[in-house]
Length: 559
Image (cartoon, rainbow, N blue to C red; front, top):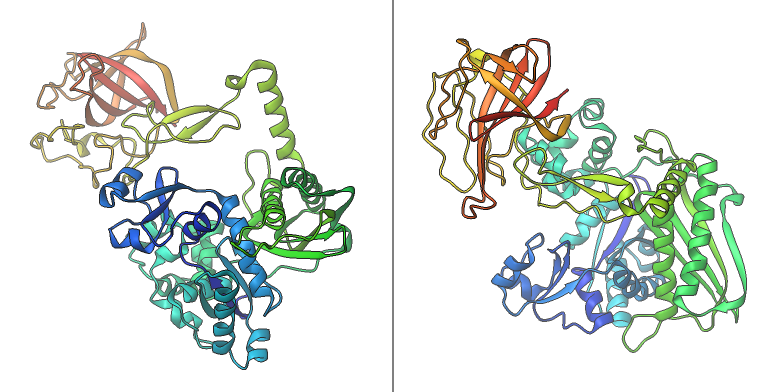
């Protein structure tokens, strides 16, 4: 569906909570929260009345609502429970596309003409879902899936041709791109209307491909340009089974094989799938069909995941008292790429995103781990911390990429080094867990513009190379006397020369700091107190230095 197509979107509020009630018997009328990554993903109306909100940490949510029932997020459960809702919509309308568990969309023209208008069609679909599934839902109608989704949350029908006007006052956070929304607000763009008013070419240049797609959404267009075309018949993949598939695990394995075949076939043509049709035939001839829609491009793993969800929904059913399962085992499966795009204009990953290169790299790295152990192949995960060596965690290839510490709020970018005339002798920053000292200096300083959630964290940019072991060094002032830092963060002299090893002194042409940090001062055995400096040398090198107990060392190197 393009930006000009009137789209009807059905949205079920708090769907992860409702799915937990349907599948696990959790009482959704009480205070319930679904957690993902130890944060609230969705919560019930009763929980919201007690102050629980999305994004809260588990402990904070439970402190606000002691009676809160906590449920872990399960995407498979959400998908299984949503299958009867989609089936109910299909009883009164055709061409339903699943956006995600809890939301589905279809072209509004057909139902509107059949039921005598868009409002009547919306009422009929909401009534059908309520009667067939005992699930509350809301319908929104607008041009495009994105605008229809916002209209559904507001429970409104946007008049034809008024979608851009409807979106104009919506905050930029509705784009669900936190980094982009934060940057736009800092630039003074607070609404979708203001974002849409920017020239498309300038947006593409400044924010890249994803920003250009977000700009289309803000302007009332759909989330992708309509390069969708009917795929050639030979892109479909199917398989027939002598023994009917009645168990979910067996059917999921068969579906995964088909998913990999489909992805490889699309990659051979340089294509990527955006909508996936899943068809099944039972032993007694019953035909089942469902279309899954994805906001991005479906990878082999994403295709296999949606096939598994769908087969699980068909074979097990999830609706209370009204099972929605096939009448017999499945004897035929078929995957149909209902929408494909030429895979161009996207930034490829390290191993590429089309063809078999990525899969070959994954298999090769997994093979190395099988021979040498999981720790033989590591990938870096960026997290929180006050120093460069604290912010990176190495995890084995294939493991969950979870940072060791929460990242916190980003700090505003600062240059790695500043000219000597622009830097104070002691530009203060907060010391972790302590009140910052009074500012002193000669008026040449630069202060941190924003205090992050990790007080004392180094400003951006990050060093290019963090040394495994700090390299001892000596910093001298202009009189060749050692430079130190007092308890009040005052320098004994301006850094002028750096000595490393047996080499001669190298002139320091610019420096910034100190950035003090006093960590775990309440635990003497683990305490660490130091001051960090950024310096640039006469030979062009830029370094991160630290001063601990009167001893200087090189911690990292900048590009």
